[in-house]
Each structure stands twice: as structure tokens, then as C-alpha cells.
Length: 227
Image (cartoon, rainbow, N blue to C red):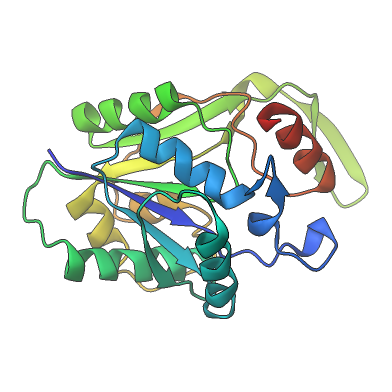
């Protein structure tokens, strides 16, 4: 069974402030994105990694790789207008570079700015997808929630809601077929794209430390872990 990884790092980092996109911010002497690469390479050095980056960021990333002491092997493709288009481009590259007609192959899609992904969680997602065809990690909501409707709000049962994480892992042939659909704005992650085919996704336990770096506070938290 072949396993593949798609890392999506197409964000401009606007909510972070500053001039450096968040995926390139240096933490513990390495760019944030490189820590994510390191985790997946330690998990399975034989799994090809396809990295989707905005075209304008590629020269900068190449310069960071050239100055790094070691960089896990990976392949870079151009990111698209949205996350959907970035994953679509990565899957197109995968089909050309790694032809594979096996129905058992798996592809995991992960946010490049989640550098604290536990290796055992990666394994759990891939093992679950090997059994169930799909695996989407989730964690419970810890804060109280309120439903807002204009000026009226009401509490909701937080036990019925969960936060979705990555990597989201699927049979390769299912994911490729899903990403042949036209893009619609309701496609917020890979699970929503696959579900549009009428396929139910199977959820697994995520990890609280699997933080997606979006704000400066997130960056401080990740820096504390990695340092």
C-alpha cells in the first residue's frame, strides 16, 4: 500500500502581521513549514511529499532550503486561488509523477502551518483510512458556544460540535475523483469535497497540540513547543 502526503501552504499570512508569510517564520532555527516537513519525513521517509506553494513564494522557499542544514525530500507545485485549487494542482502532479492504479493507495492532506502534528496521530489517520477509506481528525470544543441570529443569540450544546483538523486521509482514487468536481464555496476542507460525492467520512481523534498557526498567539504557542 503506497502512502502519499500533500502539504498545503498557500496562505499569505495576513492575520499574522509583518512581511514574512506565516509558513516561513523562523522557529528554532528552521522555517515553520520545514518543521512540518520534518514530522512527515520522520513518520515515513518513503512517502512522497508534494508541497503546494504560491508561485511567488517559490524562490524564497528555495533560498530557505538552500541555506538549511537538511531538508526532507519533497516536490513543489504551484498553489491555486483557494485551498481547493492548491490540492487539485497537487493531485494532478501526483498523477503525472507517481502513476498508481492501486485501489489501496492513500493520500493525506495536511495544513503546512500545523507543525506540531504528533507522529502517532499521522499513523492513526492513515491506519484508519486503510480500514475505512476515509479519516478526518477532530477534537472536542472546550469553550461554551452561542448561536447568533442577527441581534438574538442562544446557547448550544457544545458536545455536538467538534473542531476539524488535518491530516485528512483518503483512498487516492476517491480523493482524485472528488477533486474533479467544479469548485463551490462550501468546499472548506477535503472532507467537504469528498462528501459532495455522497461519501460519508469517518472521524478519528485529533490532538490538542496540533495547532494551526493563524494568529501571533498561535505562533508563540508553537514556538514554545518547538524551542
